[in-house]
Length: 109
Image (cartoon, rainbow, N blue to C red):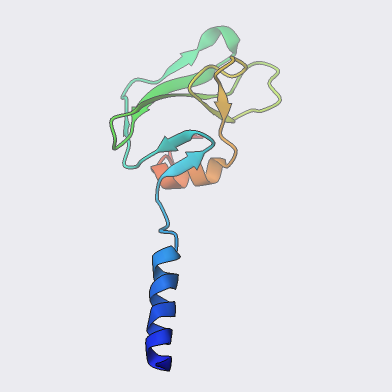
């Protein structure tokens, strides 16, 4: 009887454990690696050099990104998703190191 109780307890614990994910998740944004980066990156010259680009994740979702190098910015090198920094839908990546590691973006400054 004790053996049966032990097996039942282990089975419940295993069933309740969360599976770690390699997805990058921040708020409602979920990016599933691997990603395909567009070959063309452009600088938004009018603001001092913000780098912009797009990538597509494994589930075919397309994301725009911006790396902030605006003149006078208080967040140099910060990565923003979905829209230009400061725009209404713009989302600043909170954990830049995790973002780069999970998505294989080590070449992003």
